[in-house]
Amino acid sequence: MESLESQNMEVSQLMRFQEKKRLEAIMNERRRIALDLHDGTIATLSAIKIYFKSFEVYFSKLDHEKRQLYRKAMSLLGQTAEEIRLISHNLNDGTIQGFGLKKVLNDFIDKIQESYQIEIDFIMHDLVDTELSSKKEIAIYRIIQEGIHNVVKHANATNIRIKISIIGKNIVLKIIDNGVGFNPLKSISPGIGLKSMKSRTESLNGVLSITSRIEKGVTIIVKIPINI
Image 1: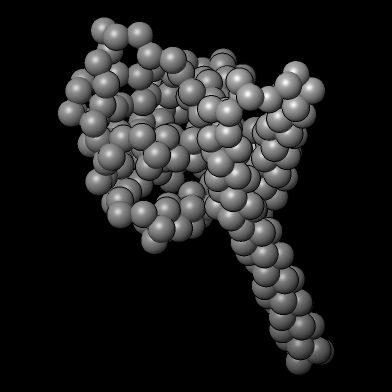
Image 2: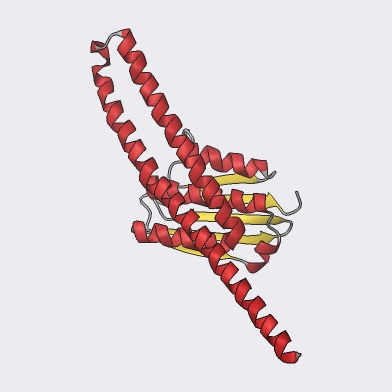
């Protein structure tokens, strides 16, 4: 009897192990496809759009109909890139729910460090995981993703520090880089990435603040209430 129970337990453990491996394989494939779409297809579409824009110097030689066709082509390019970006994001959202925020962020950061000459220090307190709903996990992941991409594209930085912790009744995210920074006294137009970060923060009743000095980098702080 004991031998049968032992065998049943071993079979059950083996089945759980196989199911875990199957899920990991699915999640890894989703992550790979999402990354290929984001870093490959979207980057190519962006390059095509830049090439197209170079033709605008010849606008004066085009009739109205050809200008309209050009604008329609540019609009379709933008829409296609946005649709692919959404697919990529949805694929990645599934991996967050499957593996947890900390692991997915660590994997994403590893990929960035492999692709760019930048060092990223990441700290996430273990207690944070217990306070994160699926919605918060996805929003925080997107905010960090946009923050890192902004630094890589614009800051000319060599280091990014990212920390997620609980302070009082808030989850606090800090993204600090050592890049070129900007003059806070001068009005700057927020890009799509920054608008997205702000929108995601506000969707969780949170607050996003940005401080910077020329040649002193940028500090982004996001505070999200734990109980929302």
